[in-house]
Image (cartoon, rainbow, N blue to C red; front, side):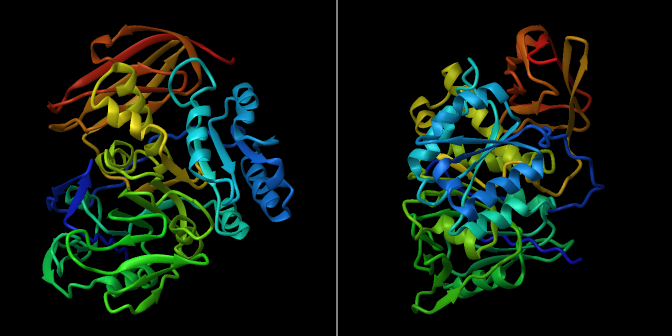
Amino acid sequence: MKRRWFILSCSMVLGGMLAPGRILAWEPSEPIKPARSLKAVGSYAVVVSERTCGNKDWQEVAECLVKKYKGKLIKYAKEVKEAVAPLREMMPNYTCFVARPEEANGQFVRTVHQMTRALDDDPYTDTVWGILTGYEAADAQRIAKHSEPLVMHRLLAGFVDLTALDMFEEGACFSELEPGLQWHKESGGKPQKRIGPQDSTKLIVDYLNQNKPDCVMTSGHATQRDWQIGYRYRNGQFRCADGQLFALDTQNQRFHINSRNPKVYLPLGNCLIGDIPDRNCMALAWIHTGGVYQMVAYIVPSWFGYGGWGVLNYLTAQPGRFTVAEAFFFNHQSLLHQLVAGQGNQQGLNYDRDVVVFYGDPAWEARLAPHELPWTQSVSVRHDMYTFTVETCQDGEWPQRPLASFLPRRIRNVKILKGGEFNPVIADNFILVPLAGKFQEGTRIEVVFQAEPIRP
């Protein structure tokens, strides 16, 4: 099958600032086996309100997920935080909050963040979570029923960090900074600069409708009701009405978006686009006619950017190692670690803490195509001794975010025996190791610790 990637800009917005992109070549490599994810079957909770379960169509969504993962259904009467006690008892690897649009508002998102950190005594998130919603129940049902993993080969974006282009085989970039600037890349080739029309609206719509991108990224100006394609110049807009995603060019011509193939949407630099104030909003329209199965987005203005752009770093700095849900999870733990350690911009980190949402089934596997990575990492267990090992296979530089891995079981009473100088963060079900700077081929790092299993 021919594979295409689409990248639509030559810069990205980082913490309110525009950073120029860099172009690197994509060199295909032999596939590698992705890191093992947490088990979903038998360790999956579905949290839903009694009122939502009273609607037959939405009840079927919840029941579909329970059957799919041999999970547990947790109902609450009035407020979602009522589910804390049963979640604390179960401690599932994954939790999906099934919610009608009327429920999935900004306060709901904040509460989910807070309650999923309250299942034990540490300050970190205790379950990989997502909110499953849709313009109508059929949208959520379609996502709940879908099981086939997605390898994200084709990208369409309204920004680009062109270092990420190294992960993709084929693409087209439409700059949001310079009118008409485009970069096109054929399979196996190098990016070629072109100058096209200033109004790129129809070109973008055509890519969505005809070329079936399986990952969409956007940045720049946005609200709950629109996305503006141009950042420094006049261009078209994406809008929504009655669940339909559509675009208006600068001549007010209207183009409907009907892109049904399963995809991930990462509007990591957009303000407000993840907020659901009512059914007439961009998030629901992307799910309804844009084919979005998972989405990571801000529900507030995105001036700081740590909670969004870090997800992209986990995905592209280690392509194939993490699913989108895992990248969202670990980036949030990195943010929490900086808050706990008193590092970084505390005001910005606090601002971002509870305002980035993950929509979709969190156990659905969507990841970048695996590449040969500059280091391997693994967790081994012998009795009550755990070893996190990192071995570099070439010269390189550590990524912006900490190295991360899930642990094979939940633990307590951790005692670090080796590698304490790396300042590892060891929670009940994961380890983070913050590293910085350059490394050389042949470097070996070990963190050895003793711990008790929480459950046999």
